[in-house]
Image (cartoon, rainbow, N blue to C red):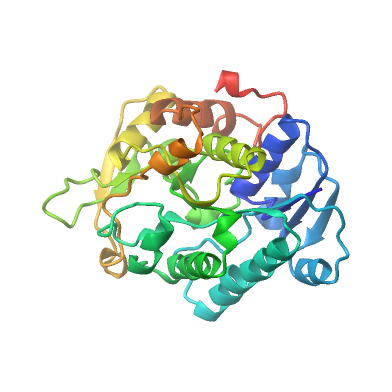
Length: 333
């Protein structure tokens, strides 16, 4: 039995698709579906799982031993909003909840794969090395990133990372993020801006060393993320922290251009000033160092930005299929 927290969310539901595609249906999904108006429930439509547990009920069931024969917990559940202002909520939801799960996994020798975040790297001045020795040197720019850093530190100090794998996701995009509203990817936002206005809005640069639209991110397609997680599930000797990106930094202008190209249109970009509240918390450059994952033995190639955006736009955003089809194949990606 595999437990997948956050299984109705963006990366979680994509991982459930990945598990189903590889013949694994004995999965318990843990999540909070919220209002029906968010359509988060639709991410599970057509996917196979053994049971669904509401997230607030899960910790007690786990502690009481009510769930049997658990072989692995894939913990993707979290409040991932970088603009969340309720620090106590983030401590409970992202830090305390994760500690309960990790403690269970240690006590029962259960494989744990959990979501950390590239937000722990802050402004990137300390680099992007997924080394547990670097955890204490990092300075996140928001409380979300700090909640993830707190758990990474606790997991290291308590020996969790000697057996578990923590994943520092960079800028993930792809199907099943339809419920994320303001936290959805720039591809998702750009697609809808193009249809509604014929142009894409990007932030101006407020640093002399970056041109407008040339702020850089490591954009990674969600299918690459689920491939990595499946590999880690099959290779429990791979432990510690791992970056999940492509190892290549691309500009927001590149991403917007790829979206226009996927729609068969010429790029039209509108640059807007960055809000004052974001300027001192904004990352101008992120790029995952992928050497550690490669040294662990993962050798699959990553989807290029242009190919990933093209598939996402043409096969999902521009069709009536708002989620992954189990008939899909990575060979078609």
